[in-house]
Structure formats: structure tokens, C-alpha cells
Image (cartoon, rainbow, N blue to C red; front, side, top):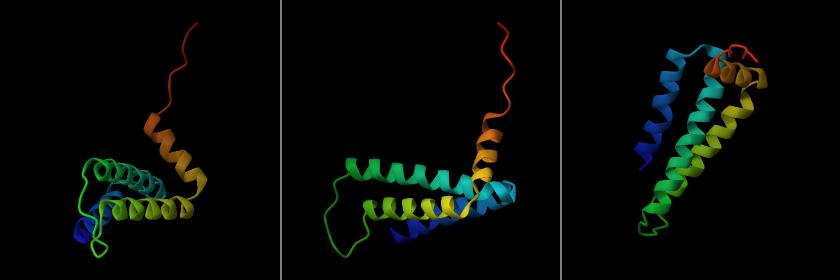
Length: 97
């Protein structure tokens, strides 16, 4: 489970560094981690595994994804997040009446 957590956290970070502009990396990484946390919560609710204190559960993964996503959002600048959202949506043409 710890290997899965490392892979699902490190792999998107490396891809984002290579595919996006530097100012867009933190907002994109933050959004990705929040989505991964949501999927981990959904899977944890659907799969009822044994409750062992020693093992890492899907709830732990969801908490880790959320914590790292919050950290990435805090370290990013607000204008970077706005730039990320504007590039994704792109400019829309003016509608005619």
C-alpha cells in the first residue's frame, strides 16, 4: 500500500514537471491530488477491509493525498491557479444576441 501511495504521488509530479509550464505545476498537482483523494475515499467506502491498526488503509491514502494537495495549494500563488484554470477553459467567443 505504501508503494501504491508513492507511485500515485510521485508519478504525476514527474509528469507535471515535464509536461506543464513551471508556474502551472503546483495548481495542477494540487487538483490531481484532491481528485485522487476523492477516488480513495470512494473505494474505501465501497471496499470494507479488515480493520488492522498496523496496516495502511485507503483512508490513510486519502488523508495523505489531501494533506499533500493542501500543501501544494498553499505554496502555489493564487494567480498561478487562475492561470491554470484560464488555460484549461480557454477564451470563449462573445455570444451574439
